Length: 82
Image 1: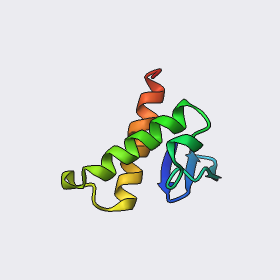
Image 2 (image 1 turned 90 degrees about the vertical axis):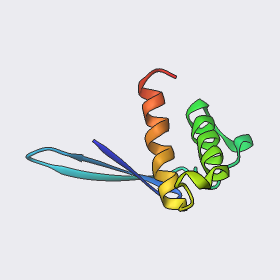
Image 3 (image 1 turned 135 degrees about the vertical axis):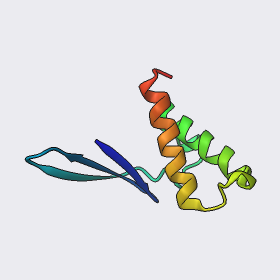
Image 4 (image 1 turned 180 degrees about the vertical axis):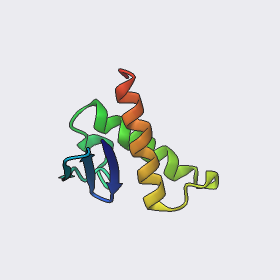
């Protein structure tokens, strides 16, 4: 399974040798504020996104790169039970 952040939605790709499925889920995590977060996952995503936005000197000056990196970090934290 592969997840790709594309602005306001997450694209999930599930593939094997017999099938290929693509799902799009709109969550607006590219613009939500912390007050609009619906759960801890969204709070984590927004917190990481804002931290990266404030630290653009660390190669995070491109919004799409920042969102993709935020997606990866948040998913790893979720997998780790955080």
